Image (cartoon, rainbow, N blue to C red; front, side, top):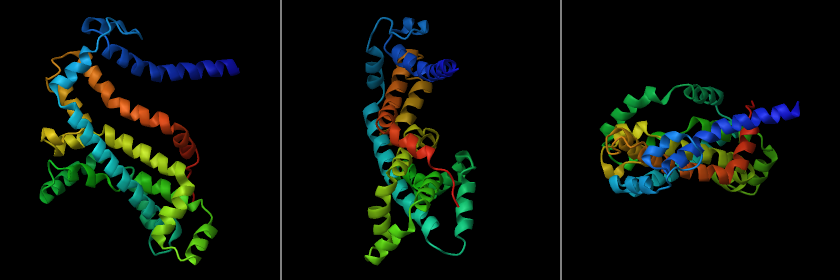
Length: 268
């Protein structure tokens, strides 16, 4: 029975890993060798990657994506921790109503708010600026939820002792409590960074200046806009370069990520 279980798990893992391995292999193959579906490159070549850099400013797009993802993720962690702490440890009227309202917003697709957000960006004059890529994402419902649950699981004595020592609420949050919920901090960081790095729809709406475009937006326009000249290998090479940073981040922090997700159940 155990052998059957491991075989099924192995097959499930391979079904997830195979497409990505094939994508890397195909991006290193010549155009006529892509359709072989083998795990080894056919007619090994780096031409697909050099073509991508020749046709689009991918380096600039990478810097833009990294800047937007790092700044927004930092703000999400800071603001999410502050709101989560308030909902978990401070007593005020309407606290539960606010918490459940935040939970409700998690059920709404981001597409519903696209038009109102775009109109706001136009009114503020933020179209084609980094503000349009950062500000709409700095408040994250999932981050608030995870921080709220993590803070609720810490002993009240820890907070009381800090207050007796004269610590302010901000110092309690960032110097005393956050080091005790490091897996949650890493989970929020990874999920936020991954979501921002892969976001293509919103940049396509608010960014038209090529010098401000993010990497997913640039790769999308490159793949469907004609610059790839219908060359599948070139499109795959661009996709590999887009996915590689996320893969590296997850490989470094996967242990903390899994641990936090396994222990982030809802508590009253």
